[in-house]
Length: 189
Length: 162
Image 1: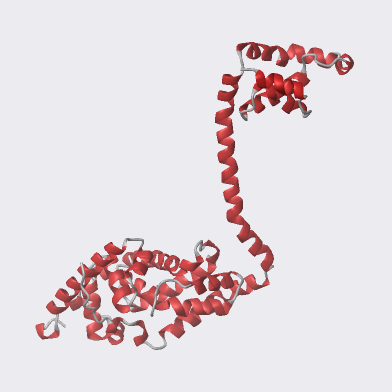
Image 2: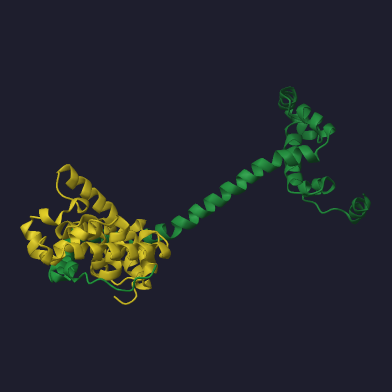
């Protein structure tokens, strides 16, 4: 991902989707899936839930594409839908008494499919992410997983670039401390 | 606040599952296919026209509302400032129900007798007030109402007034 800022082509794709162009919809999904997944994963802490939430968000976005008032900033609008859907998914999961990212305990992670998919290091990373605030998680994943710049991250989260840098600094520091503390040689993995 | 040491979050990369993106794209495409097909069948021009005009129409409506509010607030103050006590006292006579009734009872006489107080005078008063509200001096307001250009002698007379 070179320049993560929305390109004018997004506006053209949005206009095409409004006319019912399925190919344009597919391009939008493929272009913005990774960043949307990062936002969803930051909020849900579960790969499968993040994927489902992303799909729901894309469907909702295409259904309500007429409400996208700034088509050249489609991705920011999409991320907000992802956040709303993730919030709903968390509430639903909380009702079902399932674990959320905030409750993740590395020692208590017993989901075999998740273990197989993410691996031990991935599980430890998710556990460490659980120590961060939702904003810090999103900034960290958008920056270090998706290589977004602070301007784009700030636009997505509706915060200042300075605040984005602050979140990133704190998130990296806490993640390193947490990951060092739960290294395999400590016998915690 | 500057920590340039990027963290390797590779284990969380969604494309570790190489099929994930295709799976998501196909699932979304299947779910939105009926909706997009319906959009293709809809007259594109009508939708585009509505979409393109929605915001300008809303902006124009807001502008008209603001202009209306300003006018409503400003007109009573201007009228009360511009009109003298004599004119204010004359208004109830022209608009009184008895005058209107008399005017309608003798419709034929009213038609042949101009400059009688009655409905026509009332209309003139309203126009005069609006002219004054627009900032037109009282001396010119009657010409604005009549639509007839003033004679040069009138112009000089008025211009000579303090």
